[in-house]
Amino acid sequence: MLLAMVTDIRVVLVKLADRLHNMRTLGSLSRERQERIAQETLEIYAPIAHRLGMGKVRGELEDLSFKYLEPEASEELEREIESKREQNEEFLKGIRQSIETELAKESIPARVDGRVKRAYSVHQKLKRQKIALDEVYDLLAIRIITDSVKNCYAALGVIHNEWHPIPGRIKDFIAIPRPNLYQSLHTSVMGPNGQAFEVQIRTEEMHRLAEEGIAAHWKYKEGRKGVGADDRRITWLRQLVEWQQEMRDPGRVHVHAQSGPVPGRGLRVHRRAAR
Image (tube, rainbow, N blue to C red):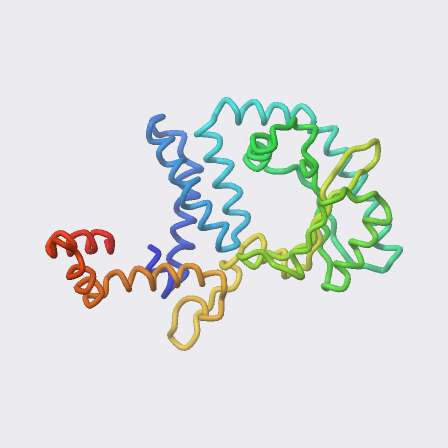
């Protein structure tokens, strides 16, 4: 699959879509198969989706895997989040309206959405930081999507003027994108009644790439399938394949085999490594 991805990225897009469909229909399988497929999904497919910038696919794969691998923890967390759903929705609605009003005053065009953080992501944070759900600063999040980088920073100024930012929670992934080319401004602020929430600010193009990643812009030009050599999202993949090809090179295998005390054994070891 990795070798095929280098020449035609659509191979992995189809494979990820197939795995997502499998995870959505996992309920009919035995418990043992559910756990095996979910573990494989969490360890292999979700990280590949993340590395390719496919946020929506990665998120659903992780949440579905969490559901089958840790059903009790998943159900408990879902219940806890659901118990505060109306309260959270009302809070996000009020914040969204306030932001829309303030952005309009500054003539910053934008659409504003609200969401609750994904279950698996919350679970990981609770385990890692050993905190309660009420202490998760980014459990509730607002996303501002505007028309330009300039207005992204202008919107950030509006947010910080309206609510007090939480120290250490401001991240500029526009100036310094993540390795998978994700771009956005992140900040966490203290809202009404001491309720913290996160704000993500990005352009329409940044949002499209954050949600769909490499699937948003794979190319097909002049008979050459896949993405261009300049696409940094699969640089790591090309390096992996180059390493594998070096391991397969007969000259390299021969040299390594001669250096060992038992030539035959050395040859078998290096061939096994190449596979």
